[in-house]
Image (cartoon, rainbow over all chains, first blue to last red):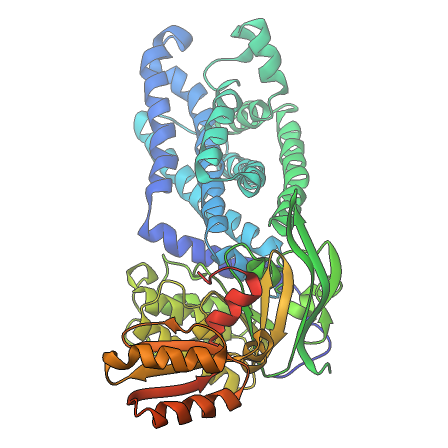
Length: 263
Length: 312
């Protein structure tokens, strides 16, 4: 019952609290690994379908097509976990009383959201690692340096992390988890497939080319592809990083402020 | 240091067109229990959410443990705990993990957080369930864990939003004991409830709100007195005497008594003079009684008189 008159200001308290909450989220994942399985199986299935359906016609052989296709699938893998599970987890939390408790604790309003997103970072890492394993089994070979391959994986994960803040924002605003899921899936298709994932954008019809050109996912996929195949990255890496920063800077404050104001 | 655990003055809150609070003023000294009583939708939960800094008021002001809820929400949060209507513990974690997590969020080092969690789990009789997932807990166990989670940080003020909803009578009594224990520790408590009995047994003071307004406040005895009058209740030994007894009661109280229950008559009177008069006349006519009482109206009757409707 000690009543200090000064609030306890401790350095990096927000980060420490976020990590405590991230551990909470991960403890639940180990009991309910569904989202991770979903984050791996869905993109792996896309990869296998595309590879054997179109490999021959698009690239002449499935082996050659896999070198093109796999990097984009990696980005989808990281993005999917973020878009779908982050949002629904946060929305479910908001529905029960746990959020009221968090909001009545002397912790930053950022911490519960960042905690959830940080836990997802571990999930992306897992998803990307497993997808890499599947890719290698199917015959994918890294032609760039090890550092470049790691950079590609890192970029996919970073993008997943930044994109998930948009999902967090939707989750804080939405009434229920079904709305979050619906919005995630509706945006998922154009965002992840209206890109260079399956074929170079030059081969797409005009309207889709326009969309793919402004779609933030395209430069991320292009950069990952160049890094993994050892081809020149050009401007795609810089554009991808700018998009990552823009998504984070745009949606993170929006999500935190909506979380603070939620009634 | 403010002498009040919390105080609110002219607190107002609207949600769209609905006025949830319409200028509520209430206060409670430190270390006391205020029971906030009212029907569903009266504004009880809104009141708690404003005091717990979860909602900003549209008008009026409120302070908790001496700090204004709008200007210093962080300082308020360091001193309060909230135990919700819907249990606010994480079902997918164990009881122990829930409490350790709260401790760590309150900046206790891990070892201390575990120690505090263990202490509270024993105090609330949850030792054996500590390692089990909360999803498998009974309603009473969850409520106890929720209360334990509120105490991790040694709060000065605790908000209990309908703590005993959905508990069977035995469990409710158990919870009341725990709440009395908190009061004994010097914690200020705001308790919302729809159960008059609960407010009567736990609260030092009661505020009745309805349609977003405080319509009465005081000690439970004050409230009963505000409603006015006493009630005389007589239970007859022999139902054959009923008619004679009704005559006596009607004559003295100047009102026709109500027959409540078997062979029982009740009639409101102004004071104790009527009581003695009735006693004397019953004795004169040799009407035997098994029970005879003069009492203040129950909180239930007070509530009905104040809000113009039956308590739910």
